[in-house]
Image (cartoon, rainbow, N blue to C red):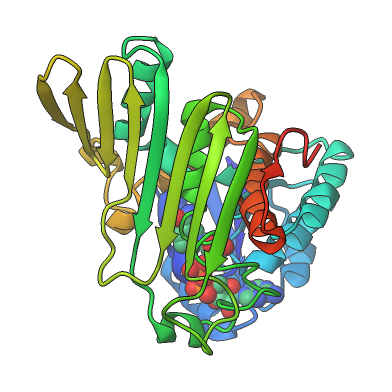
Length: 342
Ligand SMILES: NC(=O)c1ccc[n+]([C@@H]2O[C@H](COP(=O)([O-])OP(=O)(O)OC[C@H]3O[C@@H](n4cnc5c(N)ncnc54)[C@H](O)[C@@H]3O)[C@@H](O)[C@H]2O)c1
């Protein structure tokens, strides 16, 4: 049995704890939060020990895996601490908030014999898996272009009540690093490595309330494939994320579990691809229900000695796309992405 601990006992920690409680080969033994009442509440639910700091928890618990569910700016320093204590680390997105941080984490990982995995759980959505397979097999012909839209709603209290969202220092950005990094990750999960990006970030609806952007747009090139990206938290509701791949034989649209095929001969087809009932029900719909699939795949790899499925190397390519948009917006010009974080 592997022993797990969780740092950060807010919203997403609930999902991690619940998923772990369903895994027979894992025992959750402790959790930590600087807000003691949060650590105690989670600990009470699962009959585990509560701590007010990661340091204290690391000193008292002999664990195998550390789950990082804290604000963005703490992911790297806490992952480094976990690795230095010879733990495997499973970290929430984003993997870092800057190029310097990712470099620091890569250096620590080189010295460590434990593994690190990143939670980009939407990769496990059945709709994503199915379409990725269809495109990779060549069944749809070449990909000619792609577009992605994330149009969600986040209002003032979401930022002002969190204690860490809405500032460059602690969130590291807005809609791009937080909500839509999953969609950037999916674009490259389907299409491979991008060559360049030109993009902008803006704050349209929360001026004077947040320092960071509520809206981002970008034009990527993946080889000769143009990829258009738009994300905002200024909408009136959390609309399903739209991912569209225009292929030689069909235009394929993914919106959550719904996949629509518009074939070039005029035929239309629609599929609804859900997680099986055994694995559903852990997260909110718009997070996808992939946490269980993502977390159990990470543990499977640790147990079998395989490389972590979403490794730091892999996740840092997604980070490169994100940092590229911020950089392009700042400089007002196209930014090359090849080798930019090597
Ligand atoms: N994968 C997903 O779809 C998904 C969904 C939601 C959140 N997340 C990520 O999970 C992380 C947490 O998000 P959340 O919504 O749960 O935020 P949250 O604010 O609800 O929880 C964060 C918790 O960390 C605690 N914390 C802050 N500093 C700490 C420290 N030094 N030591 C210990 N605890 C500390 C806070 O007190 C808080 O309870 C973020 O990185 C977020 O991007 C991912």
